Every structure is written in C-alpha cells, then in structure tokens.
Image 1 (cartoon, helix red, strand yellow):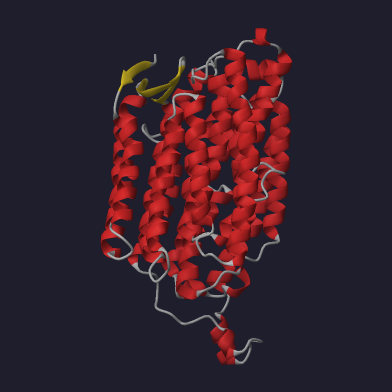
Image 2 (cartoon, helix red, strand yellow):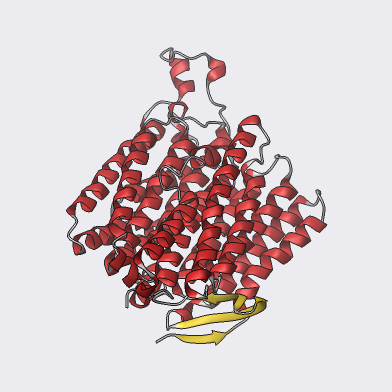
Length: 508
C-alpha cells in the first residue's frame, strides 16, 4: 500500500547543490582547496539526504512537497516514489565518486570554478528530474540540466569540443520539441500531468491519440537515451568532456532519457494501455537494433572513451528493452540496470580519466603494458569490463539474467539471442583492452630491446606508479560497487528492492 507523506527532504536534495553552487561561485577563482572540499561536501550531503528517504520508501512511502501553483490545476512540486528514488540514489552516489575524482583530474586545468559550479548545478537539475511530481516539473528540470550540461561538454574549449557541444545542443533542442509536445498533449488529453501509479490515461481517448503520445515520449526522451538513430551527439560528447564528467554523462545523464520514457509509459499512459496499444514490441525490436549495431561500431573504435561511448548506447538499450517487455522480470532487469550500468560505466570512464591524466594516452593501441604503471586502476577497469560483458558475480550478470527471464516471459527467444550476442561483442571490444594493458610489453621496453618500431620520443612518459588517491579511490569504490551489486543483489535496500516495489504498482 502506498502512503503519501509531506516532507521537505526532496526540496533539500535539490536545494543543497544550488546553495553550494552559489557559495563556490562567490569564493572566486582562487582557494582551490576550499572549493574542492565544498564540492565534495555538497555531493556527500545530497547523497545522505537522499538515503534518508530510502528505508520508508521501500515500505511504500511516497514523499510529497508542493512548492507553487503555476496555473490552476498545475503545481510545481515533488513526488518521490520508488522509481524516482532509485535514480536519485544512483545519481548522487556516482556523482560523489566523480566529484572526488574531479579534484585530482582538474589539478592544473583551467576554469576550475566554472567546472565545479556547473557540476553541482547539473546535480541539482538531475535529481530534480528524478523527484518531480508531474510532467511539467520534470520538463522544467530536464531542460535546465540539458542546457547546464553544455559548458561541461565544451570545457576544453578546443575546436573539437565546441563542435561536439554544438551537435549536442542541436540534438537536445530537437528532442526538447518532442518532450514539450508530450507535455502539452498530455494535458490536452487528460487535463492533468500528475504522475500516478498505473497512469492517468484511458483507452476512451482513442488508440491513435495514445499511440502518438507514446511515440512522442520515445522520440523526445530517446535523444537523451541515445536510441539509434537519435544517438549522434553521444560519440562526440563523451570523448571530449573531462573524464569525471564523462562518467556522469554516461552513467546518469543518458539514463535520464530512459527515465523519461519510463515516466511516460508507466506514470502517464499506463502499462496496461501500452500493452493494449501493442507498441511495446516494436520499441523492443528497435532497441535490439541499437544494441547490436552500437556494439559492432564499438569494435572499430581505437579511442578508449569513444569505444566506451558506443558501449553506453547499447547499454541504454538494455534498460529500454526491459521496460518495453512489460513483464515483471523485464522491468526488474531494466530498472536495476540503471544502477548497475552507472557503477560499471562510471568506473570505466574514471579509469580512462586516470590513464589520460597520468600517461596522456587516449588510444587503446598506445596502452601496451600500462598495467605495470597503473595496476590498481587497470584492475578496477577489468572488474567493470567483466561486469559490462555480464559475467558473474558482477552487477552486469544480474541485469542480463532478469532481462533474459523477461524475454522468456513474453516467449521471445530472439531477445535472449540479442543479449547473448551483445555479451559476446562486449567481450570482443573489452577483453583486448585488458590484454593490451596486462600482457603486452610497454612501448618503451620494446624500444629499449630494439623490437619497437616507434621512436623513443613516441613512448608514453614513465610517470609515477599509480595515481593519487583522489583519482584512485573513486575507481576502486566503483569496482567494489560492481561486485556488491552482483553478489548482494537480493539484499534489502539495494536496487532490486526498489524495482520490485515499483513494478507491482506499475503493472497492476
């Protein structure tokens, strides 16, 4: 049974990063140590306040706080259910790891005040999306966080970064047009935009109108979720952004697009109506195309972050495939993959950032033997990569297990085959990175032995062994999270608990 409780906690989750953003901007461009401490403190507090809602949420409590009336009948307010809290806890947890990593990564970089201000600003808008009580509130936060992402993508201010930022804005604005249409059309059809378990629509409104609404949600939020062919901004934005933010961009912000589709399907239209419309299976087949093609393209990428970006496109497909199946197991697999993918891909991008920062290497072909210099970093990378492939006992195995069960629930063996092929392709583009790092001789050793074709000046710098703790601690914590989410998936309080509770209401 759902119990609604008025609480100020959702306001604090959004308000804390906004307040700290103002404070960090006020202290100016100097005082690096103070700014770093304030940034980490801000995200830690936001994470803790979010966790405070978790115990009661898993007992059926929904937290509500109404801020203001926009027009009669439309409120700007928060309503935190189990799905929203699953995203919020995941977002703040990964944000904490990325913020700690940013302290080390941004050392010696330019425009650090701008970077940390927008990093915290994006956190506020992102959790605002996940805690929104209706479609109008979600849309406001969604657009704010989409726009606030731009300065972080173009942070390097190189021609490549500016070009990637321009492409990002074009795609996002096109997606925003469909989201805005969805908002207006929802109000036109139902006279409300509130999120309700089971949806607010009725088949009496007409099959055509509801089908149009469904696909407008998919097109609008699918741009952020990187559904092919709406994915064009992702391969350019991820490699060019600072790596700690790439971890957030891939682990959380792309997943917000999938969250928007979930809200449209389950809290606005309703799962039973989506089933009657017969639109779930067509979406699932489109997603299968995305999963396979993105994985094949990933095989061809030598730039590490670009390969990870194409992997993200396929992994977002897992989430949407799960919800398109409209079965309990499918929804469990899709929802828990939000958290599982965030830790796996977040760890991989943070490791990539360490490699770039310590060794100046971006291409996989240049990473021969780097595990000798970065053994713990590459160990964490390996754990996360095995998770992405889906090997037990990692988090990725749990996601794929439930997705396969969900596929069998609807008697679609083809989806199981797609998931297995995706795992094989994942092994094909992740394991060579691990082999190159651990089993190939470093280029400088090959040159010293006279077996290398490159000149000595082309060898990567020797550097120190391993990275500083500000870079190393987040990747180790992320790798540990990948294992815990795999081994302890059934433990109460972890993502599967929230997914099960949310599913029983969405599919009723």
